[in-house]
Image 1: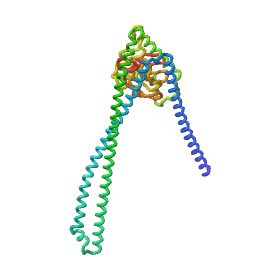
Image 2: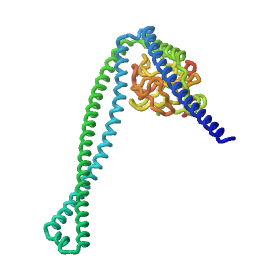
Image 3: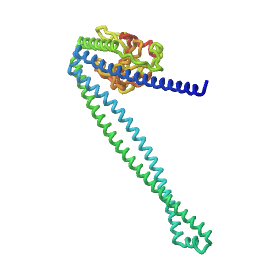
Image 4: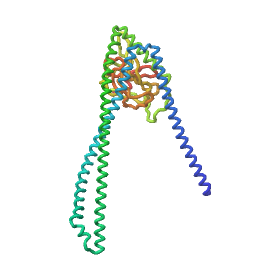
Length: 387
């Protein structure tokens, strides 16, 4: 093969590689855009489902509407408090760093000031005390030149030391300004924290009053049973709508099939169920379709497996509810949350914090209502979770 042909072949290979690279990037970009479009479509579809449920089930009842608004705001404030507390910790660390830096700078200032003053006094003595005459007195030209060069070097060194000292003072000034700015940010964040805490306390009182009014409307067993039945139907309807409208999104590379993890999944919270799947729930012989896991309010709830959040909102009877799609027709549900940490479309991994324990939706005590469903039907969680 001639040199000309070899160069032509190399150029062709290089061009092909470039085209393949550009094509790969283009496909990746198009894939991401398609994924985002599907997520947006899913969010819109969820909104339509919620509106239809409200219209069909009369969820415009004023007390339930008030409860939903209050518990949603409590969730938002809880998440805001987490952000503010994290920011405060960052500011405290920054202030600690600045304080350590200020101590070192002040020590350097003291050392350099004393050294510089000592050297300036020596130089002054050299000029005023006669040493200069000794250096530059009646001497040979060669020695005089050497002494002059030495004297100039002394002056130059002192000038450099003065410049270093002035630079150090600038660093001290910058440190002081940064410290004041960090202190102001910390003060602002603490004020925000107190404001949000105050608002959360007000909302909790409003929620308690609303629940008392709802409770007064459910004095008879018949009224309670009807509400439980309606809530159960509402959840089933939501899940059926989700099953029909779930977007087909790409699965992460490290995704483990839900069925392959059977018997290995961790509990969403560290607690023993107070009510289990299949147990009788009331006098009407309604049965529990999942588990009720009592837990401390505000404690973290973890996802049991890889999946995608397909619902993260308030639903009558469930309060703040999160639903995760695990593929293969399996869903996990986490109800009565105090706050939701993930949004529709978010991917989660086993053990990832997705919500906090609460008693939203009218529950009497903090805990997690947990279900696993397959093809929309509730199944017993016991074989799936690791004891």
